[in-house]
Length: 366
Image 1 (cartoon, helix red, strand yellow):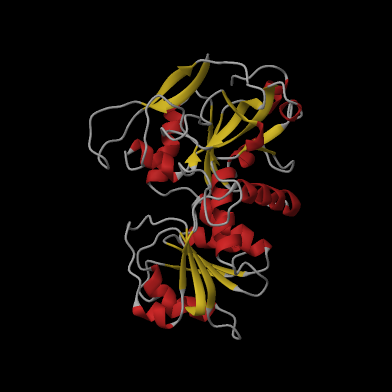
Image 2 (spheres, rainbow, N blue to C red):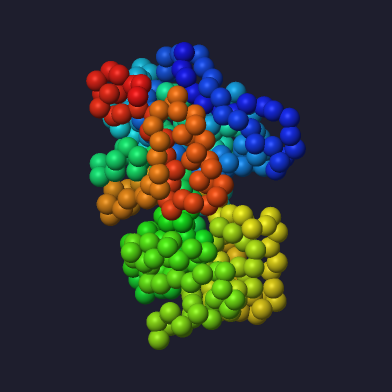
């Protein structure tokens, strides 16, 4: 049997309920021909996991493991030569399935199925192990620790597509604004754009988070709590390029209104989330400047491979805000969710499930 963590059903309305965590056990079975079994060493939270506990995410299912982000070591394989070639390797798990390479979106008729907590995909990374097709893994970059590797898959993929693919402006000399710095996706967007040579600026409600972003390569930042923050941002831009080329945004809200004042004609707003509101007005001022709003969500298997290669080549590291250890540590794991609810984190919140050295030695429990 395989131990994992799921959520337990209690009474309550969506948005008001908060499902408690609980341990579950799942039957273990040997991997099929082209499958690999990965002993999980670390897994990481995303906002979707908090939304699941609040019944604010579609397709919720009880009794299946939570979390989509994970890393571990392949400890068993199926009979195919491809599967066997992964034995003993430290890997990253592609956080979803059904999307191979089409730049427009998932090819699968049922759409993209993200790991963790839903009926669309019964697999999740918050457990002792996961068995998955060998085509869904990549070698974890050597320079990353187990905690850093677990912090990468979903946020890295989301930021890669929004910044490097959809924005079209992650280039040397371009001015890019990343809003809401502090969350995992925003931080990875900052790191990718800086590595590509762009001038990156940030917004946050926390001066401390802005200063941390500056230490990671941002050219400056402003507090979105300040009235007229967009004017202050213009003052930070280079003298010969007093406009933004693109905005990478995860909030929605008034980003089009603010963006139309900041972006060049034909500028791009690449939106990977709408945490402020599920609706966002598109204004005539944006139409007159030919501004494009491009939705961006997760990414394809090809984009995941490209992102992991870029991380390995550039030696970039995801930021881990805090971690706790052990699947038995439900209080500690709950405290990570509390950090997310309060927006305390700068970077990713990670659970160390097992030590890599123990897994390699045939032991897996912390």
